[in-house]
Amino acid sequence: MLPVRRVAVLAYHSSPLTEPGSGDAGGMTVYVRGVAAAHAAAGIHTDIFTRATSEGGRIARISEGVRVISIDAGPPRVIPKHSVAQYIDEFAAGVQDFAAMQRTSYDIVHSHYWQSGLAAIPLAERWGAPLVHSQHTLARVKNLYLAPGDTAEPQARIEGEERVINRADVLIPSTDDEWEQLSCLYGAMHDRMKIIHPGIDHAVFKPNAGGNERAEARERLGLTPEHAVILCVGRIQPLKGLSLAVRAAAELAPQLDRELALIIVGGPSTPAGEAELARLRRLADDLSLGARVQFLGPQPHGELPELYRAADVLAVCSRTESFGLAALEAHACGVPVVATAVGGLKYVVHNGMSGWLLDSADPSKMADRLLSLLADERLHLSFSEAAAASARRFSWDRTAAELLELYSCLIAASAPEACTC
Ligand code: UDP
Image 1 (spheres, rainbow, N blue to C red):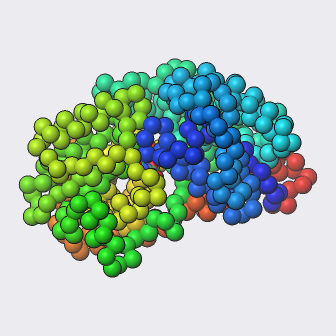
Image 2: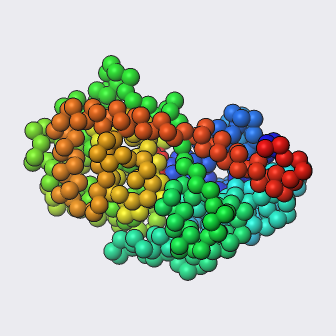
Image 3: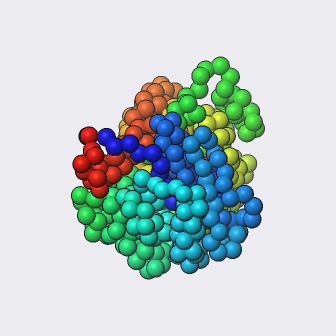
């Protein structure tokens, strides 16, 4: 294999320095950080380029071999994702100037989300480097599953995605579903897609070690060991369908012989996020759930393992989900998941073994499935063990190794005489 020494990662619209859990920072941020750390451990240097959202420091070293470089493009503040697209050319020029100033070149350009993909096209051409692209979400898919009252993704995004999909050397769908979406909805070439699943850090997300971990985690939330604790994790937006969990909790509460707690972790995202949060609060009030529902807001990623360990079950209600890292994190902590059967959730959750997949967003069905786990200790234990075992299929090291193999082959394709693989 040809050595890969330096990778330029583009995360234009969302900085990996921002904590995930609200606004534009979510699973993509966790992905970019996880892969870069695993590549650094393999001796590969990663520069992650993002749009500067504040004045001040331009280069941040987040770990040995991983730098985040904030490039001036547009106003140095957070601006909504839909208006940030106008600064893409300025950003690409800034990245190019930075590389020229540092006398650095890159073996691979890997862009994340369509806006970064557009910035990556001229850079990959300029550097003569292969372009690898990860979508994370797709406008045409989002529009197919739009929640009532939510705003459709604009045509400009669809056209931008099409340009990137047509130009990238290789696209990285996270799952077979995304592969099919790219093929059927965007006409992506089959020989230019490679499915690579995202990963997880098992040193951080791991089951309770026994002892008092669970009780202590609950105590910090004002909960007792006896509570039935349902957790939801993710940014709050209509697409995440959280009203399903709130309605299911209202049906479930009277059927339980112990107190119920629904803990919702994450802050609003997308222009409709604030309204969605207000709607969920109103719904919880209307259903007289009172203190049974806690909206914790966004929590630092490092705090998430403790929250999963406090929970009996994770509920995932998404209308669509490209992968669903939260479900994988819960499983890695030994927490069963009840989820809508969409996107990557179908790969992470083994229906009837590590969790339950719902074929429709029906609160009664979700309540039934939650009850089955909350009322049957033996079933819960068996699901919990299966969840932790199932999560072991995934790791950032594995994701990074698969990407590395791909990068090497792409470099070899542009210099076949030098390839040894
Ligand atoms: N997350 C977090 N803090 C929060 C809420 C979420 O760190 O308050 C993290 C969560 O642990 C997961 C990611 O954000 O790693 C969400 O990823 P997922 O794939 O579930 O959803 P996405 O954000 O990609 O839609």
